[in-house]
Length: 140
Image (cartoon, rainbow, N blue to C red):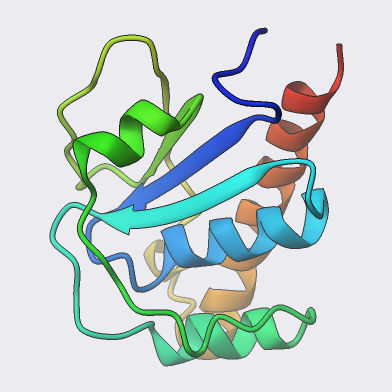
């Protein structure tokens, strides 16, 4: 796989850019160090990062508490080698030359699991996917 810059760039997208995409970017930063450029954005950004998302990432040494949700742009997508869309709701207008993946992440609330326990399961699912993506991007 060839990259647009000197290292792979990944853009994580969800609707509000307050939970899953922020978690994925934070976890990729933790897993990848400086071997991958990460960003996150939302198709309809909210006003703040989800408190439980920030709390469960804090448990694994990742601080997203000061991050601010932002709107996805065409430029974001053009810079990215891979755009990962988390969940079924977020819609993006794909740009040529960028690879797109959609992750249907675990949704513990469908099994009656809510609150902090739900968010830990979501975090662990995203961490597993991010780790696999990192390996794919950095193994040649």
